Image (cartoon, rainbow, N blue to C red):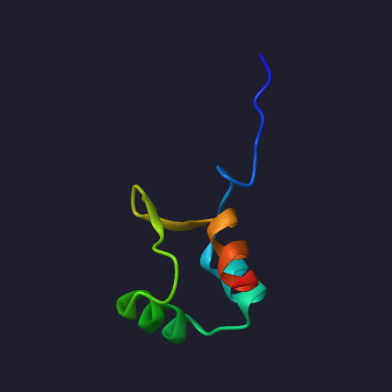
Length: 60
């Protein structure tokens, strides 16, 4: 059985989000509260963002 990872399912950490967007942690969470930034997904205690959501944010 082969598992295929796509941008729709790939989850990334905050450090990668910061690297891709150039935003600080504080700015990211402020923008989330204002509805300006994609909501993260919770994986247990971990917080992750869908790569596709971040790429769409960057391209908008």
